[in-house]
Amino acid sequence: MRADGYEFEYRELIGVSHDEIREELSRAHIALNQFYGFSTAVFGMEALAARCAVLMSADGTIEKDLQAGANEAWLVTKNFEVYEKLKSLLDHPERIEPLARRGEEWAFENGSRSRAGALLNRILDSVVDGTYVPRAIVTEAAQSSSGAPS
Image (cartoon, rainbow, N blue to C red; front, side, top):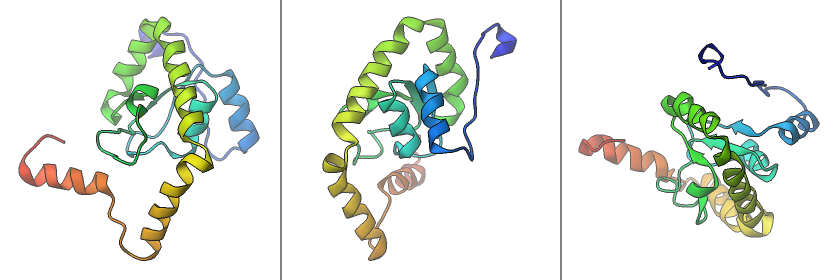
C-alpha cells in the first residue's frame, strides 16, 4: 500500500505484552484482526472496545452465535479482500470513525461476561463432552459439496 502512496504506520503485535497491545490500540485508528476465522477472538474484541475500525473475517451470516449487528460493527473481510477493503477505508477516512463507534458500541453491548458468558459456557461444555460441531465448518463443507460458492 505504501507503494501506492499511502502513508501509515503498521505495527504487528505478536508476542507482546497485553499492556503493549492496549497502548497500541489506544493510538490506532484501524486494526486488522484474523482473516481465516468466523468469530471475533480476543484481539478483535479489544480492538473494537478501543474504538478502532476493525477488519476481520468474522461473519454473522456464517457464525450464527455472533450477536445481532455483528456485521455492522466491523468490516467483514476475507483474506483476499484485505488490500481492497483497507484501501477503501484509507480513500474514505470519513467512514473510519462511524465504523469504529459502531464497533465500540457492539463490543460493550455483547462482549461482557454477562452477555457472552452463557454462550461461551455452552460452546466449552460441548467441546469437553465431544458434541461440538463448528457451524462455520459444517456450513462451508455443505456449500463445497453442493457446488455453492463459499
